[in-house]
Length: 301
Image 1 (spheres, rainbow, N blue to C red):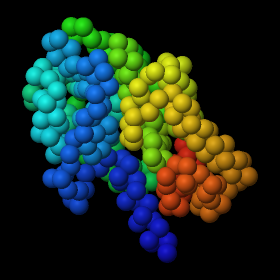
Image 2: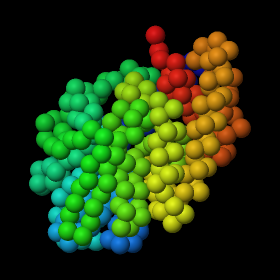
Image 3: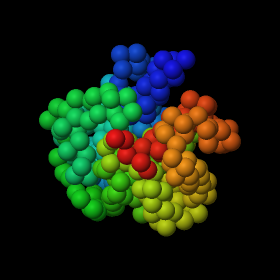
């Protein structure tokens, strides 16, 4: 039973971390495009959601999913604009968001990210739960423009405001706000339809996740279209509900840590059992999320 449980854990965390496995079949993936107005689109395929903002002289793309999907993503972009993609923004370093970097860079696109994304991609990373190692990315997949706290990208008639929430999903998160369209791309600080991943081994923390959502709530109004890292388009009310999930998980796991529970004992307590239906998870996913919350609050020794 332990072997089965640990195997399920490894598979779940591998998928959450955006690692391409030999079993993944991209041939049947379709890129779905949703018009958000004002030349801005949400694009969904397999991996992290993408956001496309079209200007008079080019376009800004937020995240690029997996490398094998580049041609399909390119075709979906061409279906709405003939303008070149001038900038590709990485919301963090995981492969289901940065896999498209090299393909777009070879077309002349400038890859933009928080400075820590470049460091993580260049060095390679390790999954804190499974120990699985992701090797360093090739040079042409690394960001060519990095920033520390905030930056702004400008094209003719469009601006994108980028900012870095610290210690949230990873240590290199970026959110992107297109004020003219009132569209906010959150990266994986917001994941809907399942629990988010908290990459505690690479700077992630449940407290930072909540702080990041609080920043989004201050930025958004009732009309803001919010593109999460994964899951369906949402709004400020949906974001508030998501925050409640994070706070509940933090408080319950923190209580078990204060009681001296080990991580396995905390999982065995099933502190999130009553949230399964609300989140759209199952017992295994509940346990996985307890683990990442636990280790983000109490680092592994």
